[in-house]
Length: 290
Image (tube, rainbow, N blue to C red; front, side, top):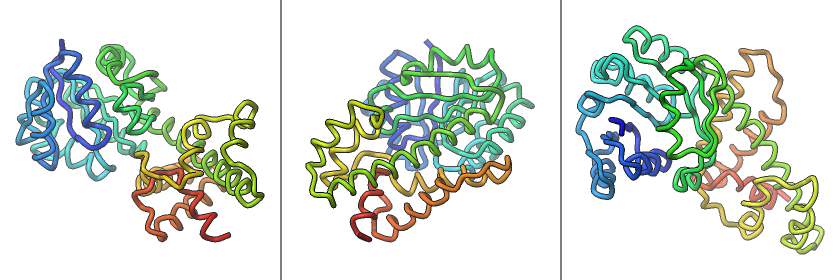
């Protein structure tokens, strides 16, 4: 069993760290809100640490799942952060959805300390984290990836190396671009069915047997029809992710007109008070503005 540190115990990190402890690894955790780390330690066989430097001491693997680029700079590069205090040879794995640029920067910083860095954003949401069936898309050195694979596999259903540092984040951007368009399309379809006085759930039952079927339709159409939007991945987070996608698109000269439009639709949802609704709440915007 490995010595593992997990930094960041939000709705994703909390259950992910729990899977590592349940698998028998020696797990230390740190969270900006210390009470959350203490709560986690009381529920699992692990240790809550007061500082990052204490948490990463003697670690073989350090996992992070925090908010955004600026949070990563704080936890990785500060004097009390991961890179200066983790042992040489420790494998650093970041599950945050962030920019490709920050992944490349942290990879360079960690390489100077002989610490392989893997950017490893996840897809599957809170439910996927709790059930240990996340999809993880990785960027980084192949040997470190293969060494880390069995550890990450405790909370993953699919786990793939996509290329060098930054490739995991770019792949996650592709994922979010695809999801944004799918949810808007599904929202429009269900909204049309409502306005046309059709039995929405019966319509979904029929069309889900054909080419229109998708994960979003299978898992979110009923709750969208019922106006329930408490399924984890919040509109605020999606806007953060789409902002990253649009910024990277400008760098690589990609054109994302639908993504840009859906980002603005999510801004409308925020203005409606739906910042913490899940991403399927796009349909509420159509209901309001019909």
